[in-house]
Length: 496
Image: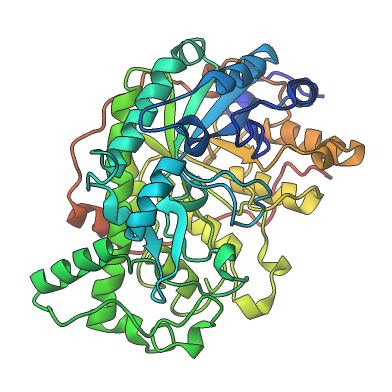
């Protein structure tokens, strides 16, 4: 059982649980409210702080531009409120389906897909010309191709409509967190490893910038740099290659040449600019509301131990031994007062196959440290459903890398953890018993606390974005700094 000690409460890390992907189905119907209510009350009884839910663009704006239908989500939010839980809402501008763990299919709105029929270049495209309809290419962010609106304007209008239609839930303190989807699976990245196109773990993936819009942008950037002859890479292999089998990623490969560095900088900068623009719209939409804004960054842990970090590079994270690809994202977030939400918190190196040169522990350490060094809050989640003590202990270790402090706040602490995901399997008796222990240990053995102020999570009205940070200033954060030290194991084990 928990207790309530004011000093220990400062070590409390709230726990949220992700709701099933299709809790509101593709036809905008809330199918099993009674069943969900029963599950939510079980979570509440376990001390869980709240739940996270995808608010699908493909459901809400299904019937045409600016024709929003929020009614079903209002019923869902009301139920969450009745069960006494808080809510993290994801602005999900991507398709559900085609990624690891996707068992539900919710495409982006049909009227957008129809535009793609006549102009397939609105979608991310690989070198072979395969289109990916999960998310609009960054190349159309500022082009008015969607009945007179740009992609950024579509996302902005959607968030404003959400705020107007859910203002009572925001004002009551139910909705505490708005996570802004910025790419496939809601993550700020390129769709470099789509299962729908035959990618299998641990393939290096492929660059996704061969639509005509990004192609033209690259050609213009290369010409401006005095290299009109440079083209997009044609030597980076295909989805399931290993780094050494490609000219681009092999030892001393193209990625180390002047041309390779120019391309990788351009490609990764596109993500920074994309995230920055949409977050500015998000802070305008939610300014003055008592919510935090968050984004998600993907935990691409395979090939992390290889020289070229190929899988990270194809996704747009330009991260090498001598270049930090994640701290610039954290620095970009500083002006929007936004939280960096990272995945794969449950994974340990020892569980990974050595063939993939995978290092999830070092990756998590690097990304979280980068966030803390930029003085932003970091949060996270597990990448795959796990019900065992080893996974929970690893998540607790990452939440408080140097353990609890009995006399005040811990040296390092995550802002919150979201467990993936609510299911019958999680609620099965023995699984749920250990999950309850996990929640208690995340709460530093303290009772559930309704008021976040008590554990130092003062939620204030969202401020407007600060002044634009010049790209050069953001890129100064690529200079590698050693990560903070982590304890070898947590002092709050679920099986201790």
